[in-house]
Length: 330
Image (cartoon, rainbow, N blue to C red; front, side):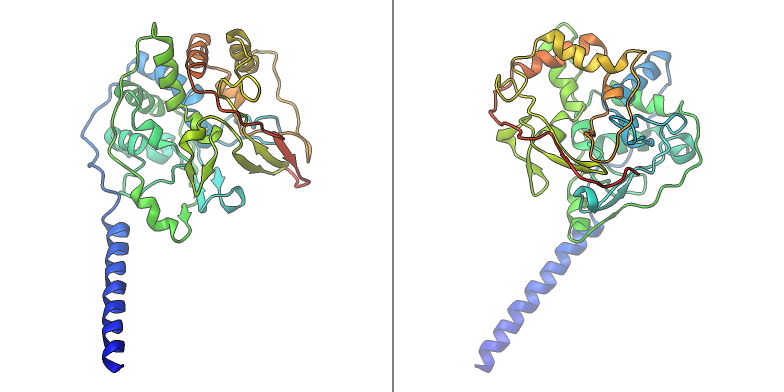
């Protein structure tokens, strides 16, 4: 019996040592991505304009890296906060930790090289080598056209500097280990020709990260066979928003929408006469930054519609798009 306990002790000891070695590797050797390249991005007028369009209306970097006023419908960005960071995503919203967006104005990343900013966008790895939580959808940005990623970098350099030091992000156990396994080297794609509507739409939908909010998830992983079928819940101060089905299912999705109605749904928020209305406790609210996506060019929205209509319809009725509560707005 003593011999058996001795053998069991050795087995357990080896297992513990092995586990500790794996944890140490994941914690200190990962993420395993290439070093930032020594690139110098020329801030041409064309690049800055393209980067401004992407960061504000497609990839919507400014959605999370600015301050949004959720006392108004869709939480429009507060003037004077563009890029200052500080938005918090924590356990109350279903996240495995407390994550705060970085200051991406020159006051926050002005001393980063172009290569370091480019790597952060396309791999999710910070200047010091730590992994970002993928509430910043870098797994989608990783396949962004190289020129588009460079354009965003060029645009960020033009933002007015705002002195703001957001709190550090902190992941809960065991996600503080898992987080390091997520970043991968970028695999830049190619921006399709605008004449190819479906391919252009697919590209835009991907870098906009539409699937991330409009696909059900289990244990933090989206369910591939239910892609774009909605039903994902996002707790908010006045209640929980439930994302809609955007597959071309005619009964539960957007299959009955026309191209014109799809474009109009977005562009309504770009109208100069539109003013977001006040939201009271318990009233419908949304995480969808309509005022940002509303600035997408009609041709890009038409391309996205063309792509959505090629998807497999998924029947998934969303019983309620909003579950009200009585929590006051922040």
